[in-house]
Image (cartoon, rainbow, N blue to C red; front, side):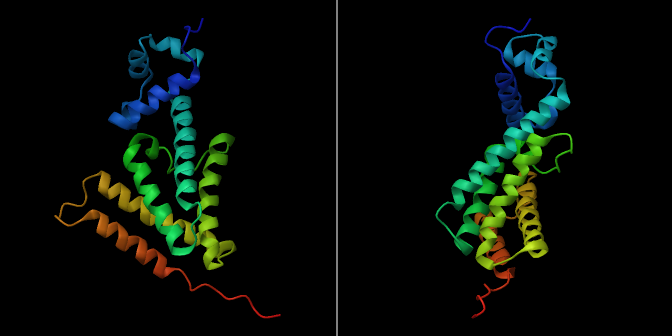
Amino acid sequence: MPRPGLDRERVVDAAAALADAEGLGAVTLARVAAGLGVRAPSLYHHVAGRDDLVARIAVGGVGGLDAALRTAAMGRAGPEALAAVAHAHRDYARRHPGRYATTVAVPADGDPALRAAAGEVVDVLLAVLRHWALEGDEAVHAVRVIRSAVHGFVALEAAGGFGLPLDRDASFDRLVATLTAGLPARRRPRAG
């Protein structure tokens, strides 16, 4: 019988907080249960196991990243929107490193909630890229380049990969400027 006051959301929130504090590898049913003051078998009333728990953290993590990007992009266009979204991406990864770690893998076909959430993140980037009138494969390539560059910076920064005493924020601003400069000039609509 499920413990009163304990539900799936509380279990997933506790696991996500543990992932952010100690890394995704620290998330085990035993650790989450101990943090909630219950025994590990009690969690099976709420999640199917560790894989299910991590998948639920991922849905929340991708949803949180999506919300951060959407908020950053709101009311902005072009280079300003791209810079705001890139900074929001970096900030989210810094504030929620465990949750963020779950956002980079391609969702499995059997996880429609995660696939839908991941699609929302891509949609934000595609909306930002409308300024450059990119469509189809060109837009997909641009989304991949932006995600790869920002994620690469974030991953290196989190791993302590920037050891030189130089302002990392200035380096990140240069990364964003380089991304913006690498996008094609905005195409003008053809006259009728």
